[in-house]
Length: 453
Image 1 (cartoon, rainbow, N blue to C red):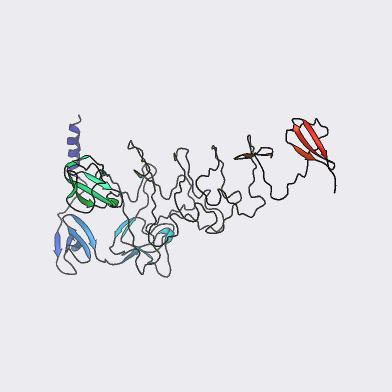
Image 2 (cartoon, rainbow, N blue to C red):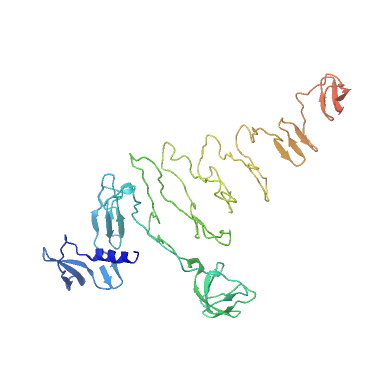
């Protein structure tokens, strides 16, 4: 039964279609004009319909046994340059014009005046969805399967076969291929240089590539802004919830990274990042990541950035390993205003803030203008503050191993014992206008008279 299915299917595919008739095509080669063109004759009008130029050079379509290309500058196409009410123009099209020769009008960034030619592209893909929720529709889909290119790390006293690759992710920035099988040297750091017969114990290596580009990429985008260039974006994603839409699950850009390899990505050994942002150059950039809004009134969102899920990170939800003026700045770039707090911790943890490491000034420096520098308003079972040799009890009593006062010590509301047996703790001191009282043992007071001079 299984084997007979393809035969039935082939018969169905090769059966004649009774409702359609076809005429033999007439193919011609146009010798005149800017280039030699291949053309088909339209039998109804007897006109030749050109397909494209056959020349290897020059402007126009180039047809080869292995592909179709558009070279040079084609004629500017402005048929889709005008605005459509609430829609992209064109709504459904795939248009090609080398040298950014296709003029179009996207809804969120279309400019009408003084002309209708303000946005251009070399390849324009535009589509409106056609069916209901039965299928997922994608205007552009790029599917890649990466199954080659693995290069392991070089190791001493290791057997390598001819054709094995090793990657040096250090200052060498190199990938080497074994051109002679053997065992690597028992010491050292492996092959160096860009030779074709590098000796490493019994192995012979040949340099084949830079390690930084020893990779496969599903989608590559590169933009260079040279002298004379102005405002530019390497990529712009504009998403607009139009009036009348009922918000459901709407995302501008989604990045999904799933590790089911069977091995953890160990920090410093295998860097597996969902989003990798690198800022470099001889001159400073403004920010690695900038989150802002164009709203003038009303908040744009509930949260600027959300890090959610208790299983998000095993070490740190945010890890900062940088240098500079500060690790976290609040209001350093422009004035900031908050109705609750600049930083608020509502978590359940052994400690709300842990400070370690060498500090040149202090663990905490407070320079604000406020009624209180530090306010302790919690409910504490042990102490409000615990220090080395001292603490402040939940009731506000200070216990310390010693005290040096450079100035005055004031006891403004002393507890004057009514009798010598008034409850007290050893060492407690009090006074009134006539006597100084000292608790010498638990619940035992003694006093000394005060005299003027």
